[in-house]
Amino acid sequence: MMKNIKYVLFTSVLLGIFVTTASAASTCPATTLYEEKQRVSELKVDYEPIENEDDGEECLETCLDRYLLISLHNVPDEIIVDVKSLNDTFKNFSLTSEQRNDDNELQMKDDNATEIKRYEFTIKSASKDCYGETLKTLTLNTPMFNEYSDVASCSTHPDFKYCSKYVNFDISTLTNEEFTKAFEKYLEEEEKENKEEDNIIEEAKELVSKYWYIAIILVIILVGVIIVIVITKRRKKSVI
Image (cartoon, rainbow, N blue to C red; front, top):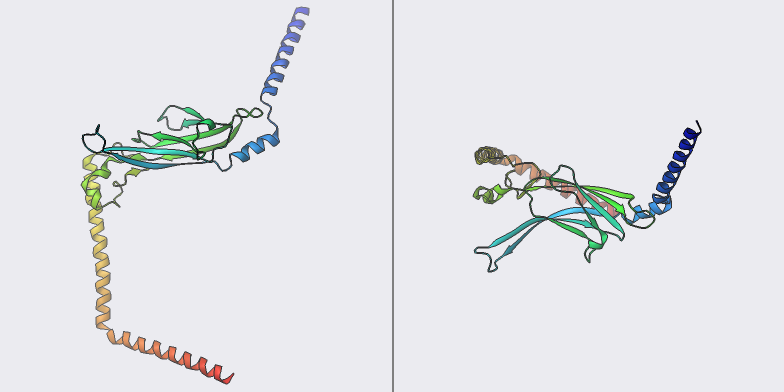
């Protein structure tokens, strides 16, 4: 019985020490945590498509360096940024404020924009008092490059949905046949819209040519009303 009591007491002491140590290690004063969160309040993330042409000696023809530049702006001191893929398209990694550039930006290149990516940026404190505390979470969806944007059809019809250089919907399974069919349908709808617009213009012209005298009468009436208003105002001023 005594052995059991001693065992229970010993275990309780160890647990108490562990809990106390863990609590002390994770202590972050509420006021300090608030200040830390304020430091990252203006931190934001975005992306920019970049295309650089290189005519160097290594290129037999013009080389094109194409990628998405992802930037975290307004990066303060003493933070860690855990970058996670929400759709398992890349390996998770971390950045620190020491890696920022002279413009207080943390930047990364996506050289393989062949699929839509969903990023989650968890900003954590790297300060002594609040190390590891989550201060802010940001998300970003990046588009995929559209290889069909380089075809001849897209040079004359850039508004077609499959002609944008980067798209926010998955076209990885789009075939040439599907692209052609969709483009032909787009041309048919465009032609139909153009005909409807032409018909409206023609109808308007016919109405004007048929009832031109009504338009003249309306103009005369309008001019007469304006003249009466002007004369009335002048008479009122002269009376005053």
